[in-house]
Image (cartoon, rainbow, N blue to C red; front, side, top):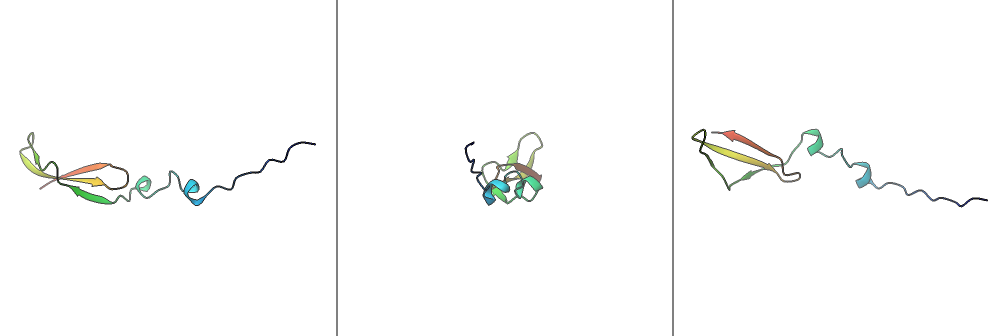
Length: 61
C-alpha cells in the first residue's frame, strides 16, 4: 500500500495573499513630510505614501 498524504488546509492569510486592499486600489495614505517643494515645477507638493505597501502619489497645491 502507499503512504497517506496529509494536505495542509490553507490559512486565511494564505488565501488572501494577492487580494489585499492595496492590490484592489484601497490604500491607506499617510502624508510624507520629508520633501515639500518641487524644484522643477517650482510648486509646493504633498507626497502621500501608503502605510501598507509603500506606494507614493503626489499632489501639487
